[in-house]
Image 1 (cartoon, rainbow over the protein chains, first blue to last red):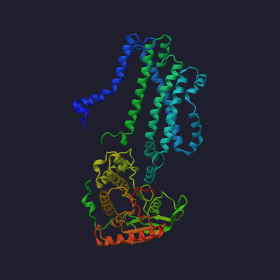
Image 2 (image 1 turned 135 degrees about the horizontal axis):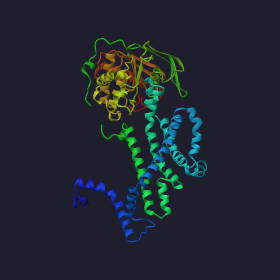
Image 3 (image 1 turned 180 degrees about the vertical axis):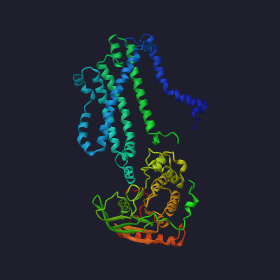
Image 4 (image 1 turned 60 degrees about the horizontal axis):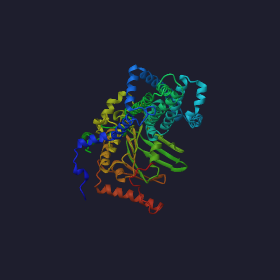
Length: 270
Length: 274
């Protein structure tokens, strides 16, 4: 057998670790350089896509004037207000349908039917009902958030380990105590999966809602820039959505890490 | 895993405290999903006695235990458990399952004090120490081995100072060495506390090691009721032990052969869900 190719260029463990850390970034950085080069060489017209440098400059200008932060704040507030409304409704209804058979019989079929309507298909009606007001955006975000939370809460309650419930009852737990000690913690992993999905939907719905009509927020900033062909501002807006989405996901992961620290999957050490 | 049993705990005192209650099952019939599991089943268990129930898979031995604690309701007959009543005014019975059924989201100590007021924490710590796990009180159940989890489950039952402890194959999923260690622990706490114990097992040697009486169930009835008259702690090597084991096994074998030719006479140590 020939020598292993790595033997010819011995790499120490530390360098290999650094190499492994950097490797995923090679392609994005190369793309960025290519993008900048294509813009500088004039191959990529700035009314089609601005150069990375122009995007960074635009970002710095917008944040220096404070305009950017106003839009980010407004969008974030909208997103989380809608999330709070839809999430709490989904959680409460999910807990009710999961825990009480008669509530399930009464509500679940209806909710499953509504779930099959794409939320975005409701936009014409939503505009008719709420106008192009703040409440229309909250409604859309809340609607997008509601179903992932509802379905996963319902599923979580239903799939609580029956052996643990039986054990709890033989130890005299019943009613609210059985709920607090066994049912809720047992359903929590599933609920948090719902929350994570919901945080993703939250931004999608907000982007659509703000793109239709808004007088402030990242969507407004982006659509306004389109009117004036400010492609650099548009790219800043798009990147901001990506960044906020990533932060929401990190938030969800953090919640899982804290609340599910008992779970073998989240245990790093004793 | 090292044996961490307290020596004075293992050495049985001369007389046991009278904590146990008697159990009476009178002509009990239970059907599950349309199939009769127990029919006109009759057994009497004296206060403080250690009874082992053996039998083939699906003979109804788990159902019997579950009916004593009220997890199954008999269609006919009467189940009476002593006069003793626990702190909540209910019969003072605890059950250990084959799986530990610890709450994975609670650390070890809160698992032991499940259903109790915070004033029981010192007692819970003491019992955890008795089962040799005092230093794991703050750990998550997921970090414990199977044997350690069963010891926690035993501690959780003992904190309630039960008058009757039901053991539903609690050692079935453990390796051979851990089983022997757990058998010693169970015998020690039974001797010291004086509760009545009913052990369901498919291991005849385990039944003879621990029990005052071995009851064999076949076809929903008592097929054999054998008193184990040997001093404790019992050693498997003795001739008397081997003779009794042979007697019970051959009885199971005979019954099994009469029923279905060629099937194994006792279930293997698999995780059967009964």
